[in-house]
Length: 451
Image (cartoon, rainbow, N blue to C red; front, side, top):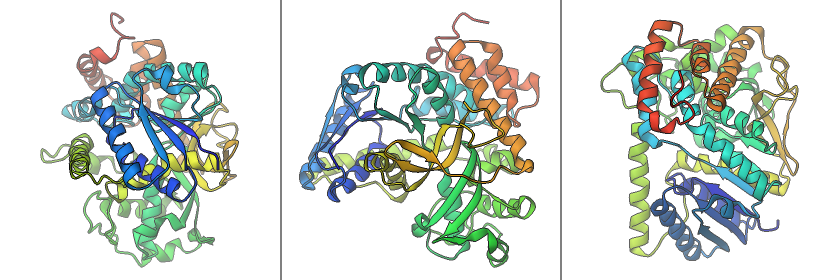
């Protein structure tokens, strides 16, 4: 395939270990050879470090691949074929506030669902709008691949801002693939053999078809679950190569017994169907929130990069298996469109009838074929009534969050938060929202001075 120009917004992120690793693999195989990757970020020190590591690694690995950076967004975008966005306004410190402030009141804290998800959207969407407008100006034919949370809301805002060639990605679908691998008693490293046909809204999707090498897994799901230990011996939520189920996966198997299908995003089903157990962990003083885990992981990645540069033998490989999965999905989508690969991927796209119960302009997460014309939704059955209503609630929660972020209307913040089933007490959620507004004030200029 011809070389492409990829602009990565948020290129100073430690996630670049995963992105560079997958780009390098494709170049090594001949798929992206001669490509140019331009990084842009708000932190020059970080983006410079990643650029230097990328070029040194490419040279050391003998790859025809060039990295550069530009602190000016419009210059970085000019002439790009693909734009990958992975930004986090406020950084992990703001995510920690989203996770912990609600918990002080006994409410759910997270970066994509519930009131924490609303505030992540409020901080992020103004930047998303600027990015979409800049792409329209400098590279209007480029595909914008959003790897920024909350991804369904980000995609909605990007399309509203005028860039229709927008898609979003989330690695959540791998949860059901890992679970199916364990049920089949095959290593989780072979989870890519599972095809999951999902439908719904990001972080509230359902696997309407599951196949392993063309074999319908739902036809044997009862037997698979009956032959599996559902005691969750692997712990609460670890994602690793342990063949035993963790508690979250075991709960999803119990959910299957009642609903007849598995969640497409296993790890997010607990926010809706195992809420008390989840909050029990959140309220444990020893609980490590994801933001803390990510901060430690980021430090490890940067330490590894520094060590590689010091020894003079850098190499463009992912940090670990989970790290590799991020790059394989984000860069894989770019490669899929560039090569008309037609492989399956769970993608956030405009609905256009893929999920019949939602509006055509809704941002939905559905299984698509990755073609030269972009992602094309694969036909699946309608969502069962038992889950359709909550999927619609998830859509409304996301839409109201985007409305609030783009208008600066505080009333919509309350409406968005209470559209989520985790928040049903107006007095309590009012206190949570007031605290979050104070904590994030400098990142929410659209609300400053407004009641």
